[in-house]
Image (cartoon, rainbow, N blue to C red):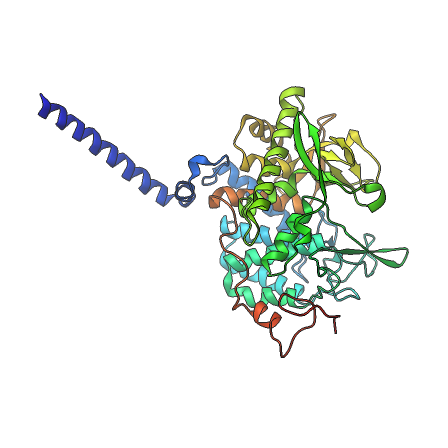
Length: 467
């Protein structure tokens, strides 16, 4: 009797072992599945797996925007559909979208090399502002500094936008290290003396009535994200990691917001989806070189931003995915918030006025939330978003909360975030897999060359006025 039971137990164990071996083999063949398991995927909330045929079609639709809007003279991509202007942030989005397109199999290596090579050349020749920093807005067909009417203008700089491009350059150098020297040279052209001060605070400049004005542009959420990008290059933006903060209560949850008064700073105080979730897509909320306390704060803020929007759906039956977005009419650009300038669910136009009727379910916020949190709430968001596109032009900005109308504006950043989100899903987790810039990199060797210092307040240089 005991021998019979032992033989049965042995057969069960052998069958279980065979099943486990088969599962491991299957997951090894599916790279994303293996990464999901090897990274402790059973504890994650994210959707991590190879793309389905439908999801591949979503990615192809997003990539169509870049095919349609690439300028042949420069390789730059229009920030809005058929509008030949682009910010540095959108240039960073372009690089991440191109990398995602390669990794998702939407472009072959030859096309990736051709597109990236042209972008490298253009970025290494961009006109700079008088301070020798990159400007706020460029013409995509020439690479010249312009205003929103397309007229040539030196228009200050944005530390926020510089940070997005710097982060994208580092990401591309991780995934395509053969180009790192040329990626490094883009940042080596820039003068950081007016951008980051000795305390590690980040500054921005704009031109108002013909006069340059320098301000602390960044607010909580954006400040830490920008600081993370600067940290990747070896800078020490210590102050930018700790903006003044206070708590507000939404649905019995304490959410941290920027403590500075927008009436005196002239900068809105906002909590939106993208600054909270981008550190998740890119670092799993574990950016290299950042203290554990800050990492925990980044993760917790993202969790609360997601949960607060989910609770609004559960309690009020209002689907909510808040992010900034573009319109094809005034006020042209809108900050749609979880909390903004003192009020929950505030919708702020670029002109400073409130536009509650313009609140919308943002397409890019939906994709990021859907990838990072596999829940009935994010399923519901995707269900009302999945058809909001033109297969030949790209994805629309979003769906209006009040009416259900679709905002048919099509932009670079929304389509880039969709590609980045699907890249995360297929890759099996955060996009960065390395640490800070290599001490032997071209950038670091030039930045620390005491005999031939560039004089631009790079990491390792003494802070001096630019030559």
